Image 1 (tube, rainbow, N blue to C red):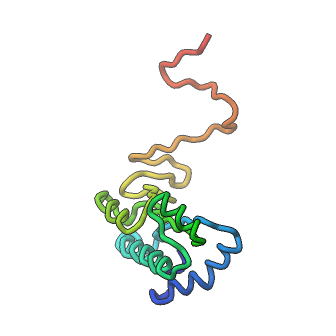
Image 2 (image 1 turned 90 degrees about the horizontal axis):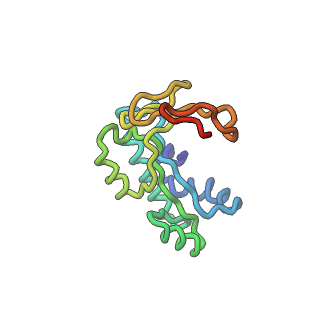
Image 3 (image 1 turned 90 degrees about the vertical axis):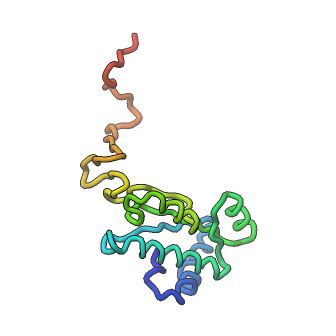
Length: 162
């Protein structure tokens, strides 16, 4: 979220001046805001940077041009009132490392969707790194060259149909 790079008192006005007109012109009713931590902030600054982004989202919503939504009915109400609905998404989990109880804290702050891995491995789960399958909670399986063609390979113990 680019607005987080500006001073806190400028977050709402930056969004209102630069992003809001583009979203309106494009007919956007729902905008997903990723809470993503760049590599330069990992690991020590990940939590701080995430909290700064979430604070930015709250300040943007306080500007009364958008609504930070926590539920489906919140989204419906925001759109019905002419606001753009915002939903916070946490991409990857460097913010929590292995402290999964912090997911509840992020939920209280408004995060509604979490991807446990995003562009690399985290302490929470594995991920895809330079074409190699991850080691950990997530196992990456290669896709067949043509996913619309049935696979000739059978899992071990599965006999061919006659």
